Image 1 (tube, rainbow, N blue to C red):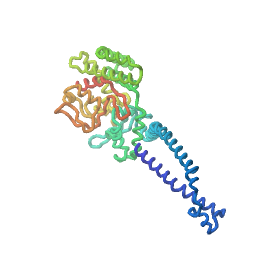
Image 2 (cartoon, helix red, strand yellow):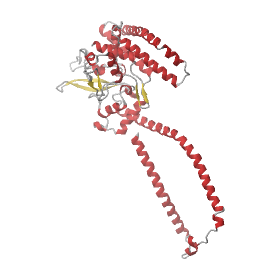
Image 3 (cartoon, rainbow, N blue to C red):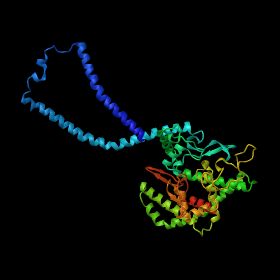
Image 4 (cartoon, rainbow, N blue to C red):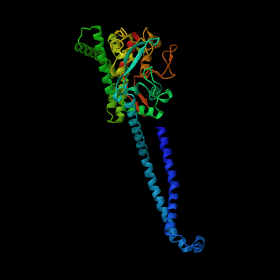
Amino acid sequence: MSLLLAASTQRTIGWVLALLVTVPVIFLMARRAFVILFRADPEVGSEVELAPNRLPAVPDEVLEGTRLDRSLGAGLVTLALIGVVLPLYWLGEPGRIDGADANYNRIFTDRGGESYEELCTACHGPGGGPGAAQFTLTDASGDFVSQVSWAAPALNTVLTRFSEEEVTHVLNFGRNGVMPAWGGPGGGPLTEQQVNNLVVWMRSIQLDPDTIAANVRNGAAERKAALLKEADPSLSDEEAAAAAGAFMGEVDDMLAPLKANAEATLSARISGVERLPEGEARDRELAKIESQLEDFVAADLLAEDFADKDVLIAWGEVLFSNRADAGVYGCARCHTAGFSYQAVEQAERVDGTPVQDSYDQGGGAFGPSLTGGATVTRFIDPGQQQTFITIGSQTGVSYGSAGRSSQGSGQMPGFGARAEGDNEYNALLSQPEIAAIVAYERSL
């Protein structure tokens, strides 16, 4: 926005200076043309009578009478106008600034949307939804393996997973060898302003919390049905879907008493907030309480003596490998080789065999391996791992337990809620869902 503001300011100053210079010149030229055309020049020598210093002086009675009264009256009127107009102008300034910001935001959003439809829909879906990018797989020696359809993630949650600075970096330099560099710093064709327009447009399409929660749950149920069919190919689609629905019911039954206990713990505060008049303050306090309720439930889920660990880990497995919206709600697209292009189900070699016989869930790909107790080694306390998944990897910031920490690269997204400046982005996963993923990863 700063680049466009600077350009607009310079253009405005240029017009003002041009008017200040050209208007007097045009007036003088027009006046001279009128004099020449209509011979309105006084005769030569008449300056003796016409020169101001030769005219009769104005009497003191006039100077200190009517003329002085007119001048003082004009000054008084001008002061009155200034005293009224300036405060009114000042009162309207915040509205003008907000209007200008909204207009700039609209311009950037429209331009970013146009750039997206022109440049990005070949891989990502229309409107920021999921898509697919054609990609050539090669082996370590560079020989052809397969032409695959790589799942391109939906971008309608990207600003929860990454900050705007991180999204800009990806647009500039690409990601994972599949997403190309689009910005000038990475050798791409887009200017800094065009990249910023794309980020502003993405800001405008982020999903609301209810839609995100529904997508996560539906994706987890679909993944559970797929896993059940893999374990028992004789199951029909309807039978697998019914069994997956029953499993999600088990998850709800597991969470219900934990939520009830958390609500009982916070009952006094909840009742106090509910007595507040409806409005922004009440909604804000209720949101804080909801966040605390999730934290209490997550802590109970990760307790060593938690009774339903099998259900918790099974839930974490389907959340980890959730394919909804091209895998943006899960972890497998980065931590499981071949998961993003369905190497087992769809990708084939030249001889027709699958690119992979099976997935090594959490075995590592773009992200590191999580198997062999890697997360238990990195995070002694599961609560630390919970926090890390919530906020993601921060560039240059260490993560992990003391003596076992690593330096953050900014590549690992955060799955919790994010606030950035005046913009707030909804969480991709609830704290209980993240706790389930933590439990699953610690079991690998």
